[in-house]
Image (cartoon, one colour):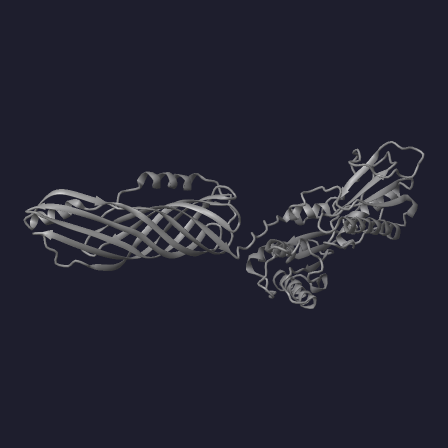
Amino acid sequence: MRTRTASKMLGMVALALIAGPFALAQDSGWYLGANVGQSRAKIDNERITSGLLGAGFTVTTFTDKTSDTGYKLFGGYQFNKYFALEGGYFDLGKFDFTAATLPLGTLSGNIKLNGFNFDLVLSLPFTEKFSAFGRIGANNAQAKDTFTATGLVTVLDSNPSKRETNVKFGVGLQYDFTRAFGMRAEVERYRINDAVGNKGDVDLASIGILVRFGRKSPAPAPRTEAALQPVPPPQAPLVVVAPMPVPTPAPVPVVTQQYCTFLDLTFEIDRDKIEREDKEKLGVIGTFMVKYPASTAVIEGHTDNVGAAEHNMKLSQRRAENVVNFLVEDFHIERARLSAVGYGDAHPLGDNATEEGKRQNRRINAVVACVTDVEGITVAPARVTMVLEMEFDPNKADVRPQYHNELARVGKFLKANPLVTATVEGHTGNLQGTSVLAREISQRRAQNVVDYLVMNCDIQRSRLSAEGFGRTRRFAYNDSKEGQQENRRINIVINYPKTEKK
């Protein structure tokens, strides 16, 4: 047998492989799938007719069946968004023919084809969900022939069979509905040797599905060295109209406008404690109110919608009161100039259906009133926090090689700024059995990052410290693998020399 060519379809998909932009973010992991479709071959009727003619028979009619239903089951491992190895089982169906002869007789035959394959699969992303791919590999196919004859036609071997390994290749398109589930459409060509000396190809055009297991999150985009340079001083609050009704500030001699800022203060889930990196952000408000002793402020607390509304209202009130207490104790602002209001989950800033939206909603707003001059407010940066979403093997703390370049940039920055120190904070997801184990593994991970900077970047150990927080500072909810991975992170806090508050 030899196959009918599928050159038009192959050419169209090959063109798509060349033309698409690189955009899809495929990640490593195992997957399984199945395809079903139509297989097609071409019966070599000229060779059959010639064989019968050589035996003294003339073929009067010739009929054949050149297509059937084929399927395959496959599994593989995706190493990155471009490269995978895949193996599986295939069944290309059955093809047959019947030749009527003079002197009177018939010769009928059929062939069944199935076997195993192992392929290299190369992908080319078009978008986040849509990609093209090509494959090349080997197939080990078993060909089972069956021949029957009537009249004067005779058959010497009615059931020959043969197993042989040959090449196969194909192209296709893939669409991922979710990170775990996708659909494929593809065309493949299998080189086949049958049991009576014929060589040819069989094409399989099919569609199918695939399911991924344990797919890992994409590594964070590398930060440039510019991201590690000392940041400019935070700006004074911008002059805008307050976005929502607030309690009337205490009366002052001149009231012109309100200066409202959405502070980027996010809280740990179901907690009201102000983290230390947020205290520098609050320093902008504190410095502002020290410079303008006639100013007043309303501190607004907000939550996401997880939990009962009454609980969220109390939680948002506590968050606002803790900010007020910080400004009173650290900047010596009179408590009468500050008020705290909790709104619970009544005024979401983001979509509570997403982790990012919930994070935006766990926030503090500060509304500062009665100031007409905003010039001259500068607060020297106290620290910069880098969040490295470093993946670790479960319950292990080894720093993977893919993060060495990122850590080298940190080391280069620290060497260029000898007065700057750094604190490495370790955090975990929800995989450890107890909080003690979680804290221990996060401490080891942070310490290993410190050790790497000391040994490989020549940073003095006295300038570095490691702290493990376990799972006490969740960044996302732990009810999904994505949330657990976001919680399993390393923060590198760049500490600048202390400056006097202005």
